[in-house]
Image 1 (spheres, rainbow, N blue to C red):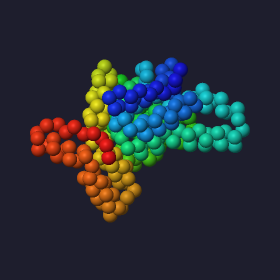
Image 2 (image 1 turned 135 degrees about the horizontal axis):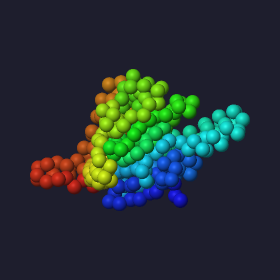
Image 3 (image 1 turned 45 degrees about the vertical axis):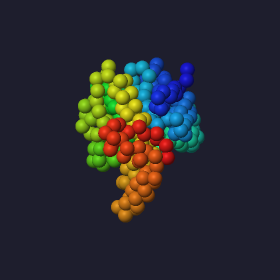
Length: 265
């Protein structure tokens, strides 16, 4: 069974975690599959938006604890080295999702735990079914978070709430995730696929290069001084103004019609 399915339709790439019998828990095959699929989506010029979802009843229940338990047979030093290599491979996908020049939408249901929550937070937007439930969970098995959770979480919910979520490992529901700002919208489970498709189609029809620059500016804003951020905005604005989508956006406005963006630089 392919651990991560990849499909492109109408300029939207859908990456589907595909271990439903194991609640899509992260194993070695899925690590490789995520790296390959995220890189493929990032560099495919026909793709203008990306959806990240899970097959079956759950998005992802975190790492594969059975595999973790098997590693206890290794000496501590060897185990540490193996985990370091493993997390390095996992992080390649997170960085790809955060930096790719197209918007990424996470569509989640059921369990969103451990690395599943980290993965969801790596997306630019997130939709959750009303049956979704969330926990960072690492502290419950004596681990610290990975997958960029310690970077994304305080940016989304603030430092104090991030500490609570990470240090206590409590489980919370979709409504609470919405209140915290972890997800953009909570929808009935039966409507999740349609709502996700509609959002992805809207993003894919947008001015892709301008959206990519906006995404990069927002991600940089927490570590940039205002002067550097203003320079970044200046360069991005000027670059957008030299591209066909700017002319098309103006034409659509003055002709009182939707703009037909090409998404090209």
